[in-house]
Length: 227
Ligand code: GAR
Image (cartoon, rainbow, N blue to C red; front, side, top):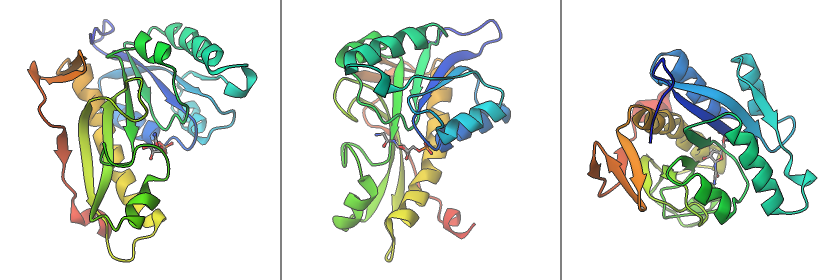
């Protein structure tokens, strides 16, 4: 699946809706020569999304397609599909793209679309994951990178970054701890795909040609909280 540009870079399109810190982590990994990808475009469904600033600053092409301008989810998804395909990416990267996607859209990109979600899936699909982990007095929380399927925040998980939930945590402190893991696991998963080490076929993730029996796990480094 991961066929590259002549210079060996995997062409990707990144979809955002807001802050864009995961986009920024991808940009920094590229800058540090740790991520052999070419970001063909950053597309937002919200005008003025903060992440578009990161893209402009990095000299990346951007586009905005506001979902409110369309009569239906289907029409928006079709237009989004056409826009994405005009950049000919081999991988679509959802980085805080807060829109439900239709089954037709997901089927079009089957095996070529990944998402990051702020929980240890299958726990806490959907919104307010940090608050829900605190409400449950969970001992552990984290983030997951997964291939996208038609079900919300579902699809085979590639890698998870785990963090402890500490006494006295608020939504903000817990979200910050999880976000640090997100910024590690997302560039890593994309790198594996760019290197041709990772693929999804028939809903199974293959890593180095072998079915992945459980997601990769990135352990928490306690020093992260002292920085
Ligand atoms: C991230 O925490 C990401 O995991 C989450 O949105 C945030 C976007 O932050 N995504 C979802 O909840 C998807 N279900 P960012 O804009 O700073 O990358």
